[in-house]
Length: 244
Ligand SMILES: *Cc1c(COP(=O)(O)O)cnc(C)c1O
Image (cartoon, rainbow, N blue to C red; front, top):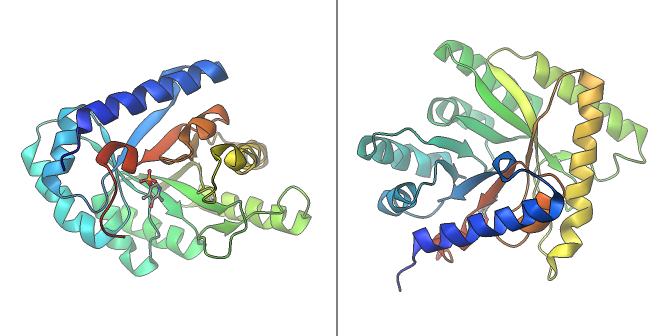
């Protein structure tokens, strides 16, 4: 069964435009990340041919073989986003491979990335991954009660301040994953909470956090209505995954 990636991308882009229209937002304020995890380089190239300029991967090992293959095959540069859980011991490899890391969830990881980026003489954009839903099986800095619990709030403010101070990494925003639900409207409070937390953190650290990475195949229209600037979409573009 073949998947028409160009047609799927068009459908997703149309849906993004509609969500922006509903929310009174400029469609150019939303970046589509095509999540190519589990799919081989030749499939990624099909997406790039259909003008996908941002690609997302969730495993360093997989990206290590795929990204160089894709880079060899195309003249135009694309932006690579690391969206999956990143162990500190893989920080060095991730720093060399990716342009943006969405899933920074410990200070230790931030510090390692900072050190490796300094060695590479570059700066990388990072986001703090936030566990807004409070699900125990989710990665991310704990934040489900940040609006009511001062301790949680102070810990988050403190983390943001520390990330913002590290050289070689640039804290540009927050990332979250919503719970899996039947009706995408149920995800709205999670996305709204992340947007409010971003506003609070901006005030606290005194610098802009423009990016909100939220929204996947099952919920991105709602995420956009709540302010997403980066949507991470796999299945709606590449079809169902057979692994993972
Ligand atoms: C796989 C993945 C996505 C994309 O999921 P789909 O449901 O296929 O759109 C988004 N974000 C993260 C962190 C992922 O691991």
